[in-house]
Image (tube, rainbow, N blue to C red; front, side):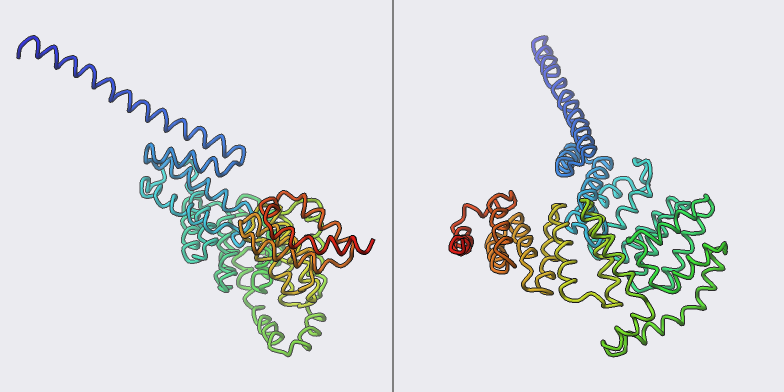
Length: 411
């Protein structure tokens, strides 16, 4: 090769090689930056920003780390409302998809510090999308990864009960108690099961209630499980009560179960709502409705108010799908519930359903129980930020105008 050609080749190498290296370094730098930005957004609970950052990281470099973080961000956004029943199923599905990609890249979960957390959050996500059997499998894997953690079989016990598999729910509950006793956390676990609405619904089963009661008395979970099984015949009595005519059933339940449980739970939920603890109030109202299914002591007006406050709480949390569902029940139970219609108008407006929002607002005005309430509602309609999207629509004035004219005429 001539000196001129050799020099030309060397120049080409010098020009190309550093450029490729720089591109690689730039990609690596961008990947780390996106991960860092996502982590910072997670700290401030800015889930959408975190999802965008982790998505960019995953596109820049397809790693298990990026997909695990992306999945966790989707999971956090999905469960802003708390329980799987209130979770955003679309976000939960996104979390599952990202987790599955991450696991395919890192089957041993070597890139995460606590593998059980991956399977635990997957279990909750599977519950949110209605895939209960997959949720059970995820909880099983979580327990395999952390076999001394009593919370993992407890979650499985809750889900088994919800699936009407009481015997296996009881077995999981007993396992959770045994694991808790090994670390002297049994008393706190029993207290959680008895007071946390997320788990306490399991205690409507005599089998589960017997395990907890006997365990409190000092019996080990295996003995408690065996003894509680002897009381399972009581379930037959409850089934017999359900089969009686509705009027007679109310009388029997009033004598055998005490209606105070429903009213206490409702009072607690109202207290949570009053002090702005909206997530807790939603759980409380859900628990109230579950308890009321058996006692049936709440009349249509009371049920409407429960659903109305639940929908209002969902609105406060920004969970419009849950709000719409609850508020529809509210107006079904009491078609004249103007406050429920107003909250429904807010939820529809936020979700972009403007025509439904205007119709709900019209029903709110029409059913206002007094002129004072109508004035208050009309002022809110003109100032609430949720209704900004519909205030410039011709239909807004068409809905509001006649009622304002009516108020003016009465002065």
